[in-house]
Length: 107
Image 1 (cartoon, one colour):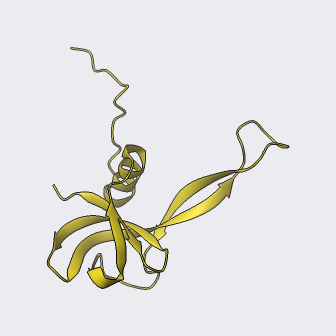
Image 2: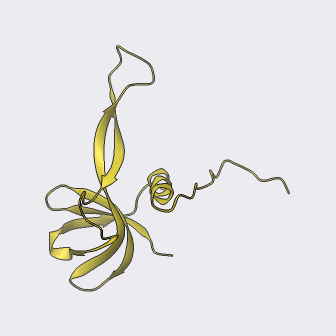
């Protein structure tokens, strides 16, 4: 299984994608999505400081391609996503819902 990675570009943009392969000059990615910060209401209700959440939006709005190659010269760093973000990505890109580790199956 290909690892899910976050790439942070020198521009500040961050993408979440499956790392299909890499060579010395490029990362070859599948199903890239852009990490987009968004303000959400604080669950404590009105009057409390709003919170920041992360949304996943298309990397390219007009492209038919599910795969993209990215020059390593434009990437500041490569990181592993948090489990919750990786699971959300899997649900969006495959339609499969990842089981919570807190759920125990009866034997």
